[in-house]
Image (cartoon, rainbow, N blue to C red):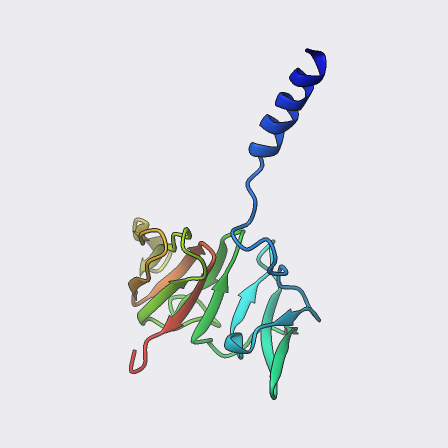
Length: 164
């Protein structure tokens, strides 16, 4: 009876810790491989101070490489596990541009989400604008003009729409 109770307790503990949607995918880190389809995609590491870009290598997977700030705004971003918070054009040295974007979930259960805060005037920020997709479905999003910050969530690839 005691053994059965220990097994049940172990199962409860194991279920209380979420497993990443793609447990086989390595967490982005400098020098780690990245898929060819992520060529020139950027991401942010936990803590928000360090950025990586997937540097393509001809005919095979690329590698994540560190990026020094400031850098030109990127048109493709990866959010994974932890949320990433980027600066828009209402901030010096923006990470991305305002306009039409699409978030594509990287697995069938992921929900892509974005929280945007814009600048109203010097020192005044607008209320947060929340956008959220459906599980496994792309999210069409208008990244707002005068964007101060945007927090991206979900295991998603974010792409600026052509002409946006």
